[in-house]
Length: 512
Image (cartoon, rainbow, N blue to C red; front, side, top):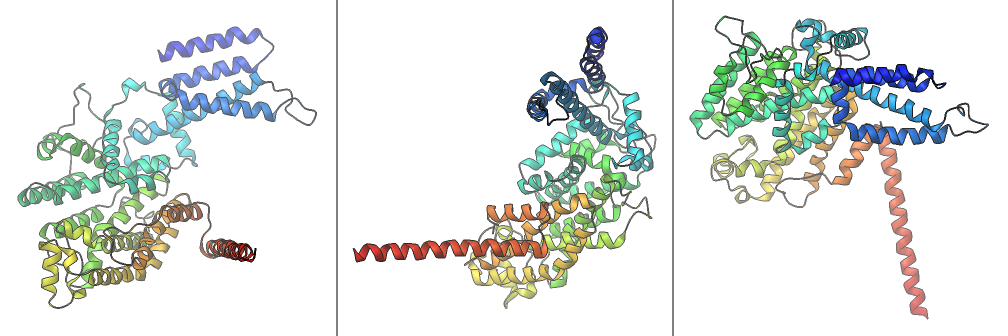
């Protein structure tokens, strides 16, 4: 079908060469070539393609409407329609090729060290890889469906449990968003396997399985005993590491969705830091044992393990997908430890805020991360109410809020380093991450200013929108404060004038 439609369009282009208008033959020929590359993709996206073509062609026609003041007055509506149609489908075809290049990099090369070179669209290596893909463009039936189906599973799993992450991920470029979702889906799934298994014994077994899987992914060697994953169609998935026994993990993991999320992780593991991943398992082990957090330093260490390491892993993804090299340890020259250290501080800071906000929510499910050092004597009695009895309100809102404020103060102490961590990221992602970071940091003032201690403090929607707006469009620091100050002064002036006008009106009505 793809070949037939392309040939028909090229044939029509040849037959229409007899006309005096050269734009139509060129448009037909170019459309035939683009249809050969991305025909089914364009067909699936016919609604946005049609809408973009219609809107753009009308705009182009109005701009180029015959006028003595227009340099493009020779363009009629048909020319505008042909031009915008070709431009829109060309952009969509590029999106399609870029998606294939990111999802199926093995079509270009199986060498992981070479795959890193075509991650940046502003390099010659990227366009050489794109040219190689065009020259050897497979049909959709030839592409293994495994990566797409597994990615859909990860997105579906995140959609039901993390709306905030889904919203934040929408601010990132598509290729980066895809791999960050894969990483976060694995993080959430592994955390649930350790925390929410039916029995403590099963939780322990799941942690052992996760650690064995990570060891196989990062340090396993190919051997004859290992088997490639063969799907029902009989095709081997070339995007998966061949040295992992997927049938073995299919028997250990609870369902196919979890296995799909583990497969996703294996596909991106070559640029993730093994040390950071194993530190995450240490945090899960601490949760599994349920030991009380004794000192403030223990709380800082736990926050660094659970979210600091995740911040480091996210940085590895960001640097790889923006063409800054492999920061997972394979490229020592590209990796910058000071940037990763600040990224850990960013994750650590957000985790402390999360712990401060969720003291009541954690207690209701049998968790307590408040250090015994913060609790009044005897601390064991307060810990029992929070962790075992699950009755946080018996501790008293005053005490709960004092715990939260002390943890928030701890987060404030490392917030400057966290901000510097964002400054060390590529420019194209700084604003998105800064918006998410500042929205989360705004939970602190909301919690401090609350008259009691809410179950889950939230930042008002309008405030979130304002923070996102000023971060995305660069209104930060003194500029943001100046705009905010002017806005508040204008509102105060308006309210004051309205109040004086109302009083004058009431006085006048009494006089009469």
